[in-house]
Image (cartoon, rainbow, N blue to C red; front, side, top):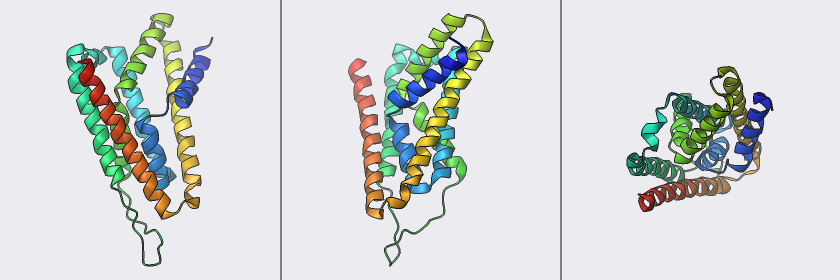
Length: 209
C-alpha cells in the first residue's frame, strides 16, 4: 500500500476511534466559547505537538520519557497539567449584560491558543506511546528510506489536523443554538472531563510504579 494511503487511513482511524481525549474536550469547548478561529489555532497547537513528538521519536529523545524510572514524574506532571486546564475551564464564566445577552470580552492573544493546544496534547502520555509505536513500526517497514516515511507521517498528521478543524467548525456552527446556560454547562463538562483524565493518569502511573 502506498504510504500516502496508509497515512490517510491511520489519520482517519486516529481521529475517529482514538480522538476522545482531553484535546477533543478543549477543541469543542474553545470553538463554542471563543469561536472557530480560536479553535483552529488550538488545533494548530495540537498538530505542532504531534509533529514534535514524532520528531523526538526519530531522534531517540523519547527514550528519556519512556524510561521506567521517569514514568512516575512524567505521569504526575502530565496529570497535573490536565487538572489545571480542567479547573480553569470549569471555573470560566459567561459574562452577561442586563438584557441577559452574552458580553463579548477581549479575546486572549492568538498565540495563547496555540500554546494551550501544544501543551494540552503533549502532556498526554498516550500520545507519546502511540507515536512511538507508529514510528518504530513504520521505520521497520520502510527501513532507511526516508521518502515514504515523510509521505506517511505528513499525510497522517495533516489528516488529523483536518479532522480537528472540522470538529471546530461543527462546534462553532451549533454555537448559535446554545443558550448562555448551556454554554456554562459545556464549560463545566469539559473541565470535569479534563480533571478526570488528569486524575486517571496520576493514579494509573502511581499504581504502576
